[in-house]
Amino acid sequence: MQGYQDFLAKWHDVLTADISDAEISAKGMDIGRVREYGTIAPRKSMIDRVVMGEYFHIYRSLWRSHMCARDNTPQLLRCPASCGLNMTTVECKCEVPGLLDNSTDWKNVWTCVVNTEHRGMFEAFFSEEFLRDLVIFVSTTSIIEGEMLEAASPADILFWMIHPAIERLLSAKRLPDVSIMGDVNDISKWGPEQEVWTDFSYYTQAAGQNLAYPEAYVCQGHAASDRVLPDGLPLIEGVSALADSNQDGIVSNWEFYRAIDPNNMHGLDYVFSNFEWNHCSDGKIKIRNHFATESFMR
Image (tube, rainbow, N blue to C red; front, side, top):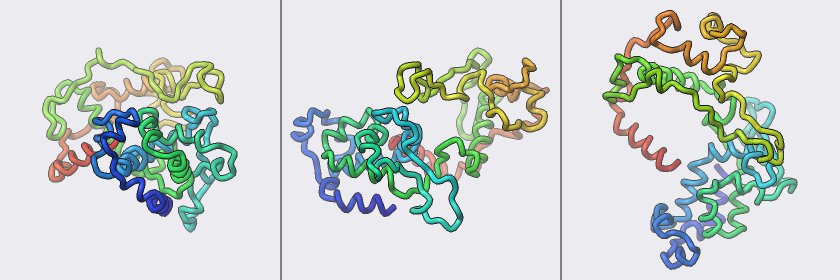
């Protein structure tokens, strides 16, 4: 990523400098918290973890910028309508054009790049010029996002590998006679008393909380009564008849969840043959370390 390399080159001395305990105290910051980023070049570690390690979340915030921009401007991030096979990443990229034509200020975008938890620390240890360069680099650099950023996730082949694995785990938790999933013994179970729908979305706001959307802003699709698929997208043949328990012609999230209950012998026309996890056994330690690292970075 050339933009990142240019950014590192310009700010090399700042990023590789150490921070003394006295400097941390003078900034009014907690020494222990700053030391979580190490004693050698902690500023570089901050960038690696909070920015580079969170690119997916940053891009999602820029896309839904009405939730994070200071003036609540929606969709600061713009992407090409289409990308040809012969187009380079420079030609086919998402960016915040407002930063280039000065229709928006970097401080307006800054609140989307670093979250509230870390913003104070960044503002304490980095200059405004640094933060401005950081925002522009993150918001305009050519990047190939491969983490299912938006609602186009089903276009990513990995989407169709992940979801059956999750359904298999869900079935194991709902079947009373299954107690082992791979090398995990005595997995926690979900009985009927635990099967309640919790409607939550970070992107839902009450009326008056957002300048761009003064009326109530609701992220559709999260409620139990919301359609399991948007209007116009068909379900697989037979699923509607199976799941539409109230016969209103709409299959809701809750109806679909109840319909795929593996305890219902009159439900789905398939079952999982086993709940082994042998394909991960050989690399078990490596996989666990990977996920521990990911959790730590996020």
